[in-house]
Image (cartoon, rainbow, N blue to C red; front, side, top):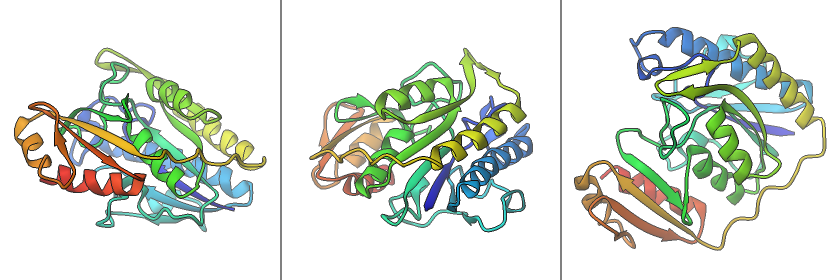
Length: 266
């Protein structure tokens, strides 16, 4: 079997402030190390189940994971691939499943001080087919388009709850929960051990099928700046709903990802 891992940093245990998520910030090195260890745990679990593993570093400049921490045989995609797949860069229909490590609450929530969807400076919120969307939402529908099932997600309690409700059968590993501007964190080693054990358990069983792709996807982007909404509305087929919100409808998740890439680069 071939497994894809998409990794972020804001849902990693111990990571609490924006400073910890970017170069030169307080505790950034510690955050990257724990991110590397949690990803490595998922890799070990997958390898124990006989899987080939590819990891996509999906945070900031996508060069946060220490390759030396990963088990031998794991392939790591660093940097951005200049395509609309973003955190899913490298995914295709040859994979048997996908794991999401270090994911976080969506922009509309109050369950993490690091809550956001996509680029934090861009959106107040994102919706897909009328429902608020997290990065898991955007990425899992892309995986569904390729027929790749979403199997496991680790991250804060908010995203674990939302993702499990959205994707029945998804296994979650809670790393922490948000309390105002604070995070209440599980012990790092406990998180590492649970990720490894749950990954091995899931991949040692018959895998579920991916969710069926929707007939169409309508995405609403509520921008923080009205100027960006005005620019995004120039994308072919886009409609400006109000001063801050733009809507676009596409027939599949890949075209939706293409639209967001260009609408948000405006």
